[in-house]
Length: 149
Image (cartoon, rainbow, N blue to C red; front, side):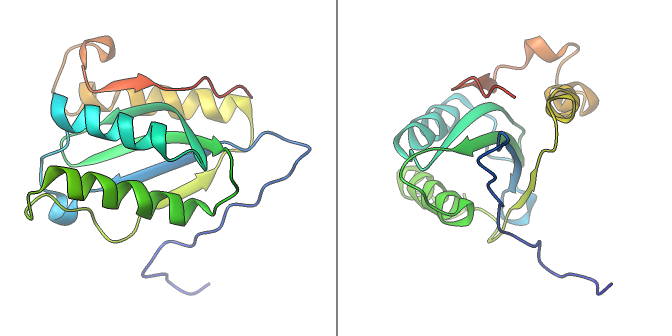
């Protein structure tokens, strides 16, 4: 198996099973600018307006974010959707030092159990990073749409 320099992309959507994708996006150079109220509001707005994919649960960390998404309407590849909301937030921020890494990482979840396990892990990232004592104390997380398995 060849070593990849970039993540493989492309989400296979099977109409017989739910499609929930786990996505991670990092800031350029892993600079810590994401975990604040203004960026949190901008991302929620961009995700709400970009309806090709719907965001379920998410957590913003200082230098990266994790989210769960499912296909919405109209149909659009996940890669295009991620590029769109990244460009919207970059423009809205108006600060050239606040940029995203070019790529992102994604994986399609295989079961409801996998979804809950990943959510537990993601939700506890701020605790593991020493930012809060309990996951529910972290203000930069939420759920825009329930994504049912």
